[in-house]
Image (cartoon, rainbow, N blue to C red):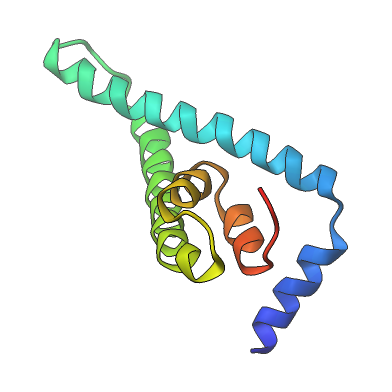
Length: 110
């Protein structure tokens, strides 16, 4: 319970402009990660040479995609109890990340 209070205090102390900036950056990075994953599927099918250093970037983007997917699943399950449309809020949370969950649990409008 105390960890939730700490998160709530941090959420209320930050300005809305910071949240908008984080949302914008998150949407851009997750869209880029999806593009990288699609390119990674396309490259081996056409036998194109890839750089070995790209594996580190792909590992980081997969971690980010998995994390955002898990946050979206949590949002889908809790959105109905907060009178939100679950699928819409899940997609929103997938792209914006933790900010979407904070808004859901603090009953903020998106």
